Length: 300
Ligand code: HMG
Ligand code: MG
Image (cartoon, rainbow, N blue to C red):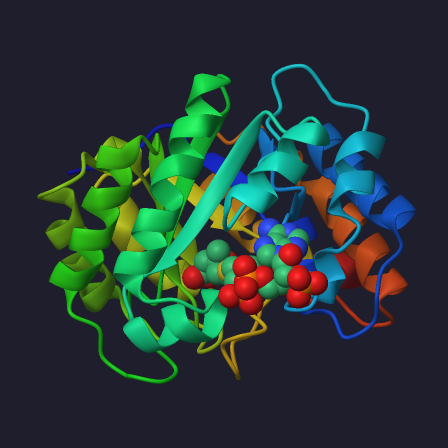
């Protein structure tokens, strides 16, 4: 199969990125970040998480953030929701799209959401139903698709089982998370092939962290199989508080540069995106992790 003509990028920096920052970022900065990302052409900007503030304090102000953003027509602003309590809070704050998040690893599921994989699926079922009754779209994540920080290797079939369950429950798209960025291209392809036997490839997204510097190679490999939705994080912000050693998501700047070079349309303005990455990195007191952002800054 050849590469797709168009790739939809799901920007997860304001959620996956900022959930892992030791310092707390005020809502006004998050709002500006989300608005700048949407203005740069990102069609989806994950805006926060309605999770327990005891578990992830960095996401505590998600209601203020979601209510504070000026929405652009055509842009989606999903938020993470782990249970009914989170759904109620997200709906009250005006969420029009949510994402539930499960895992292909039992140990990770326990550490991240305090329940087994089966319990999580039973917990998601009424959440997905209630959301869909209100015309709220639901995305599903599967974590640890290429390895688990507690269990090591994860069988592709285990990923396929959870992905298929989430789709059957009503998730319109399943995002496959290499949570700790350990995957390599052939392994990523084998995992996607196994999942694609159960869920159409057009409904799959790649969510790769870049811990071992493999994310772009892995993305290229799975785009060759037909994956056309890619999650990434401006300036490479990110990680997971329940996956020690997990570094940021693949940087959106790096993904856009790659796709621009391949002639694949994203609708994203790389210069505006890179400026946003420099701006948020400045707020965090560091340089963007994106190699492309660094190269563009050195050229300027
Ligand atoms: P629990 O402790 O089992 O839940 O946590 P509980 O129902 O017993 O409630 C405990 C307390 O939390 C109670 O408060 C609840 O009210 C409160 P208390 O009575 O003690 O004062 N609570 C909530 N508060 C606000 N919003 C809620 C909520 N639910 C309960 N929704 C729970 C279970 C799922 C809540 C918890 O484990 C949790 O919030 N986990 C979230 C962890 C998380 O956000 N991880 C990062 C996101 S996943 C990720 O990054 C991976 C991804 O990027 C893909 C990839 O890279 O692989 C998506
Ligand atoms: Mg992630």
